[in-house]
Every structure is written in structure tokens, then in C-alpha cells.
Amino acid sequence: MSLGHEIDYEALIDRSIKDFQPVKRLWPAGARLVCWILLEAAILSFAIWLRGYDNLRILFHNPGQLVAAGLFISANIAMAFVALKSAIPGRELSWPQLVIAIAAVAAAFGFELAGAPFNQILEATPTSMLQLFGLAALPWLSLFWAVRRGVPLQPELTGAAVGLAAFCFALALCQIVSQPIRLPNSAIVLVLSCAALIVPSALAGGFWLNWIARWQQKEVSTSKWAAFNTGAVFPLALGASLVAFLFFLSPGQHIARIPDFDLAIEGYKQALVDFRPNVPSSSIETVLTAYLEHGMPAYMWDFGPEGFTLVGGRWDPLSDGTPVTYTWFRGTKGGVMCIFRQTDAFNPPLLAHDEHHRLLFYRYRDFSLCLINVGGYGNFISVIASPMPLKQFENLVLTATL
Image 1 (cartoon, rainbow, N blue to C red):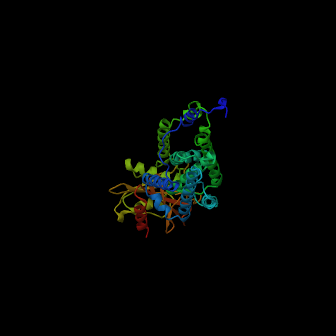
Image 2 (cartoon, rainbow, N blue to C red; image 1 turned 180 degrees about the horizontal axis):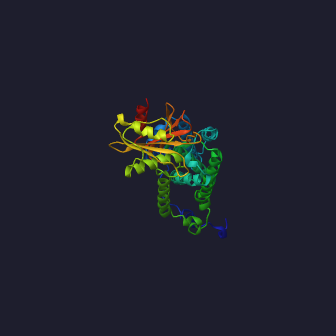
Image 3 (cartoon, rainbow, N blue to C red; image 1 turned 60 degrees about the vertical axis):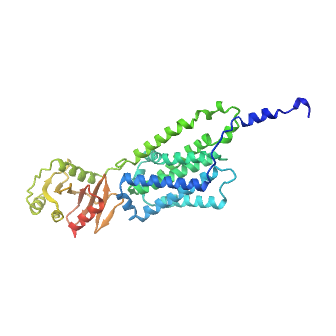
């Protein structure tokens, strides 16, 4: 080799290793997947604690909702495994593993689109997307950061897998902590929400998981990667994801209103402050007689034997003239409000509920409610409301009924 082409090996080595930095050994994909599952379990436990245990109890009485939650959790774990494995060159998924992951996702979405109960959190497409993003933000960020520790050879696909895993987790969370509702546009909502989450996740993968493109830059300091300061961005992103998660998971958020239930709840709250009977209320019989004179059904609840005192009744039609009665029972801790209302037809809310002896029991706005179609007296419904736990409330109403 001529002197004009002599290689300066010292300079070559200096240029090659100038950006080398010590790194910690990457855990195996299986170990990181276990950490991811533990994190999910912690998030689910916290969500259940925050929202209360009534929805969880209803979940175990609703096989369709329970199966849907289990399928989405399985699909989430499968896609998380895909994302973590794809971040290790030479350790990518085998074909059997990939088929199992795809089958898990297909089973979850197929079950949902086939008509399994969908959640009221997906009530309207634009709003549902924001809500799903809020619930998926924390698991997405955690998984994305775990994947970023590796070197994905197909960063866009890896980012899409991260997005799909977070989306499945958000749907499972909805099934577990929200009351389900069947919607005619649920399939459209599901597809649009999924696409709206996966596409940005794939773009984020192409932007922040493409280590090969970064290494091919002549000067890392002048590349777009310099703007991505992990020490500053990650805490900010983590804080924002926690705020979004807590906001969208907080009790009472984004629940479609049910007028009959709202009427009973507002009546209960008003009775706590000031309840003034406007019909004779010396006894259950006198209240019932007064209601009959106003055309209401010969049907009355009596919670006296269960330790509640009859305060009285009110005949208080709505602004449109619809007949409504309020009967207030007070106990040592709270009370029970019973309303009767005339209606055109009996259309119970499409929410998760327990049914005993044709009585429908719901949990709504931190209240336990019982809905009854009072047959044989025309079109009337009765709603009983109390803030006591659902199981205790069911026992109270059933004892007064049987």
C-alpha cells in the first residue's frame, strides 16, 4: 500500500468510539415482560381502589364483560411481548410466537365487535378517543421507554406494537372499572380509536426508536436527537400521563346522564337538607291514600321494619305536568328516597346491573338504585335511591319486597 493511502488507525478508532457510552446490560425480554405485567397489575389495582369495588362485583356477574376484559389483557400482554422482543436484534419473534400474539389480538377484537358489551366510556367517538388516550398514556409511556432501551430494527412496527398493547390495556381497564353499555356505533368507535392511537405511536417509534438512523448521523449533536433530552422529557411526560390517567379515571367522569336516576338522586340530596311533605304523612297508609287520590298506583314501599323512619311524601309533578311522587325514609346514617313517575314506556338503562325478582339494581353517580316497572297500574316506574353500598342496598330492598 502506498504512503499516500496510509491509514491512520488511531484516528479511525477515535472517530469510531467517540460517542460510545457505558450502558447497563439489557434484561431478557421475558424478565421485562414480567415487570410490565406487574406494572399493569399495580395500575389495575389502583384503578379498582379509586373507582370502588361495586363495578368489580358486577363484572363477575357479567360473563361477557369478564371474558372481554380477559381477552384484552391477554392481547395486551401478547403485543407487549412482541414490542419487547422486536427491540433485541437477533432475538425477534419466531413465527409461532407471532401467530399466537396475532391470534390473541384478533380474538379480543373479534369478541368485542361481535356484540360483547361495550363501555359507556366509548359513548361518543371524539370524546372516547381522548378518554382512551388518557387511560393508555401511562402504560404506553412505560412500555415505550422499556422498548427504547433496545435497538428495534423496524422502529415503526415496534412503535405500532407498543400503541396496540396500550390500547388493549385501556380497553381492558374500561371493562373492569366502568359500567358497560351496548352502543350501535361501538364497532366504528373501536376501529377509529384504535387507528388514532396506533398511527401516532408508529410515528413516535420511527422518530425516537430509530437508533440506526441516529448512529448514521455524522454529528449527533446537530441531529434531531439532541432535542430529545431524556432527563427532562421523561419526567414531564410521566407527570402528564399520570394527570391524564387520574382525570379520566376519576369517579363520575363522562357518565351519560339517566334522567329518572338523576331525579331520584336530586330528590335524595334535597331531602337531606329540607324535606317538607305536602300530603298527609302520618303513616304509610295515609301517604298511599293521598297518592291514590292523585292517580298514582296503589303501590308503596315500607322500610320501617329495616330501621328507617317515614318522614313523609310529596306530590310534585314535573314542569311538563308528568305526575311524580317522592317518599322519604330517614335512617341513622342517611336514608332512602322512593319516587314514582308516570312514563310512556319502560326503557331500562343499558348499563350493567343485577336483577332479582324483576327488580333491576344499578350503581350510578356513587348511588345504589333500584328500578321497578310497576305493572298493572298503567305506565309507571319506581326508582329507589340510596348512597349505601350496592350489596347492602339490594338486601334492604329485597327484604322489604319479599
